Image (cartoon, rainbow, N blue to C red):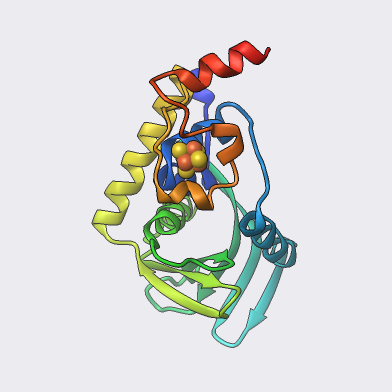
Length: 208
Ligand code: SF4
């Protein structure tokens, strides 16, 4: 693949925001491992990943909608996009992306970057502004509305640039050891506590 053809799957934004090394291990090295959190998330998405269109009063719902941004180098399939009747959006309806998560305990920003990237894709595909979206939490059945404001857009595009740069360089970032490693399904593959810069790579090379 040529560098210019690189596309960032939107899940990479959440991974990058959570831990740059996790993003590199998954999206550069193709590693994956399940833990309770990833399995629960997968079960939730199995229910919402079936494509379909539904008309309700005042809104059309599109499930598993393919998204792409040539401009920013993004690709994804949105869980749900609602198109609300709105006189300011006479042709398309007002797009409102909804990202499903099982639950989030403390830092919503990782998922908000992914949601914002969906809004950027929709804006490019439809030629309209997407002012807001939502995170829907399957465990509590609650949703959190998210304004797609300028700060979130800047953070999202900065993360996209950094991920594209990592993919082009082909270099997985170093570990970021900390409490978050206990939630990370890749901990056994990452070995964040091995001492010294590059120790993990040297260890893996020794096993080959
Ligand atoms: S174990 Fe820690 S450092 Fe390694 S990928 Fe996971 S969160 Fe990042």
